Length: 322
Image (cartoon, rainbow, N blue to C red):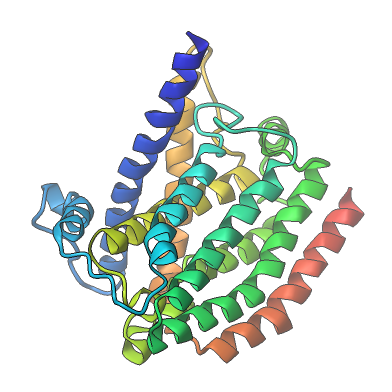
């Protein structure tokens, strides 16, 4: 019976099917908010207020011809979209949604969650390199340079929360906030700002969409992907958006914790998780609407000259507090 319950949690709720369904909804919200901030309409016709548009786009891509160029590294080219989606879904399973711990939970899982995001970026780099396309190669190189820019401040800001909680276990971090207040309200506020900015770069969203700059390098590392592979990569980005929003909530906003009535935790915890991740999504979408694309040298300079020193300062502040 326990095995069936665990399988249900992994496959249905709060597992894979829930993550994919919610990722489509969050893409729709992202597009609607982005459009509203730019005085546009956004998705409109497919479903009520266009809510089914992301799912329709996914189905359309699955039905399109899947072209594999002759010169690509075919085993790598075919496997990388599946591997990228697997990584993002694995990270989502480690987020606390229905309780103070995720389906996957172990001591030190914070390092595991940050590492998964790095692996997704490495998959993107290999996707561009394996495509044997000059634009894809440039996009892969830009993704690698961008990783060198944001990875260190992102890791430092996450580690500062681990120091504040005296644990690298997400369960401990969420539990401490549930009993003593969010880390956002206090010494973790600088780390929150750094993590959100680095998360925007991880997701390759404006102003950090340099690896996919369509006005410069067609579609960057995605240029040669089509059909099912492109659909899986787009789904990966949607799930990663949800995953990163949930990680911000777990580290800085107390996870799914909040005022609960005994016996209603299974309803209120997911509700709090959704509300808090929507707040993070709104921040990410607002950043996307406010700024124009940076050049890769501007992004790396900004990271090393400002984000890295600020992240080190965040660690020192937290260390003094502890």
